Length: 272
Image (cartoon, rainbow, N blue to C red; front, top):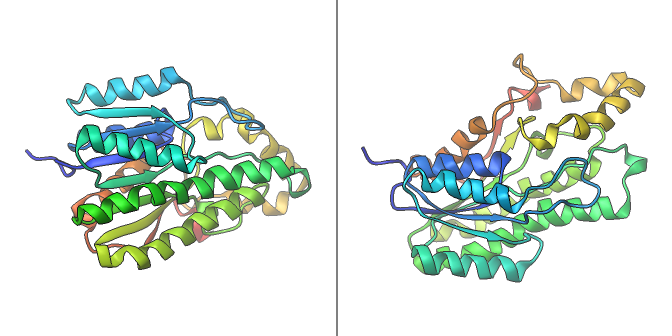
């Protein structure tokens, strides 16, 4: 039986672990070859551990175990030249590129008056500029190939509604949502679709106890805003594969006429 991504090549940023690894493995399960990218180091001020080269190697092993090819690179999505170089390398080794999943991101919970200039800048640079760099690196290749393609931006429920203690993150993810809509319009004539996915909390390092400590402390002082982080369905968070299934749909030809969509996979978080 032919997989839904058979013959396609997908670039995934932040691929060493968490959602990124899940996306890589899920697309590989459906026949895709993978270009995997991750910075593989910790980021200043981020309360949870960063990915490591060993994490990225584990992603490689899991993709190869499915009989798929993978080109893995340690690179920083904030560096436009690095992104263009790794796309060129991936295309050289795998022959083409069909899908890009801009997944790399960070979250640092802090009250508005505790957000430093460097926390603001790193959040915007990685979450928003990193997504822009990913599109700018991939889109020219997709246009040159002339066979269309799919770009999936991982935003957040915070890209559609306000979130307490995440003013900087909320701004970055609203920006990602806007990127998806704007690029969908510009790239449509090349049959390149651009959509965004908006998860609630996902069971990764990003919502570890350390990462949530600032939020818990803040909610004790501001109980009225606690409802902003409640899901409609009776779950606090979802597993990475739930987001990967949405990514797979948007990456595959099953969604060939879907573009400019902000798809919520959030247990109803945005509805509250």
